[in-house]
Amino acid sequence: MDKEKFLKEYLVERKGTNSLKWDALDKRFGNPDLISMWVADMEIKTPKEIVEALKERIEHGVFGYSYVSDDYYNAVIKWHKEKHNYEIKKEWIRFSTGVVTAIYWFINIFTKINDSVLILTPVYYPFHNAVKDNNRKLITCDLKNTDGYFTIDYDEVEKKILENNVKLFIQCSPHNPAGRVWKEEELAKILEICKKHNVLVISDEIHQDIVMKGYKHIPSAIIENGKYADNLITISAASKTFNLAGLIHSNIIISNNELRKKYDEEIKKINQTEGNILGMLATQMGYEKGEYWLENIKELIEDNFNYLKSELNKNIPEITVTNLEGTYLVFLDLRKIIPIDKVKEFIQDKCNLAIDFGEWFGKNFKGFIRINLATDPQIVKKAVENIINEYKKLN
Image 1 (cartoon, one colour):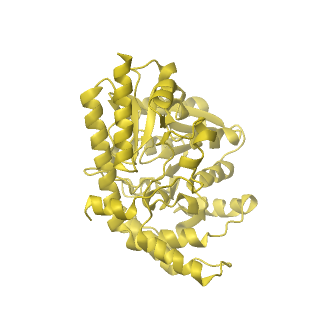
Image 2 (cartoon, one colour):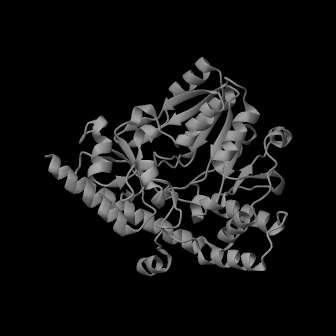
Image 3 (cartoon, rainbow, N blue to C red):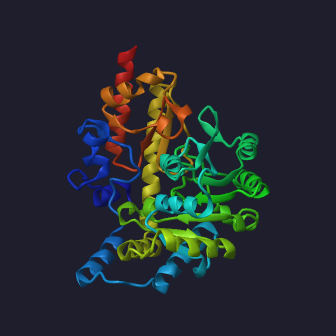
């Protein structure tokens, strides 16, 4: 679909809809008039086929107890096979009301109080919260940053695992906010370390479908022909793919029989999960009929990224723009243009932007910001212009 035609059909105003991103700016940032580019959802309507299916279900008028249909399972299985070469069996699939909720469950089920849990920073801040909220010991290992290209420090990872007797590793693949789509050899190295030291891996692959041209997401469960599948649990969802976060539905994939048995036994003590019928329906319709929409979204994100990177490189080359391989969240390093304790004043107070600050993702990343690019190109243009204009005033 032509980009302008796509935007005309799908771009939407979200103010006044109880949007966390737009209507909670005053509560979150102290200013209701900021340009909102923080939390990871979109100013783009979900595919029309999803909307029509939801309308039909709503018009039926009954929202009683329901079971999971074979059509749902088939859609999930087909999508993962065709898009990611990941062959999933129906009996492996479980459900949660979101990826973050599932991570909280796994920490409770597979670790004990005061056990050590590893994350690679900078990383999605609910990972930090899930570990600390459950009274586990948070172990962080910074990714290596080479001019905005983040890689895993395998020696440091292994050292921290051994020193802290780490029991669980929460992986982000593709990585938020570093923008990396991990290569097979990168995943194999860290999965091998975890297997060697009996560290269970939880792989958050929610951004699996938002991958830029020239890159390919590889599910951790199929690395080296599934060598590490017995030591990991995968979480995925259609929520980032089709902008469905508010329908709170995610898939848990557990191929190992013993891990699945333990999960099934323990989850009963924590939560009696019933499926969200609208979330399941939206997921199914997205996987069955949303591919054309997804391709348009990825082109929009890539165009927004290319514009931002080109303009900032041309006007403020001192800002390091992390390359966007996957996700729709770009990480910027502002440390060469502004003192790290002045970033909020510059970005929020002067540039009028609501973004995610680097220290939210890891204590050593103050001076970085994360910007959401799954939005109106005019919003991206205005944000970039504000940064450039305010920077000029500094000099």
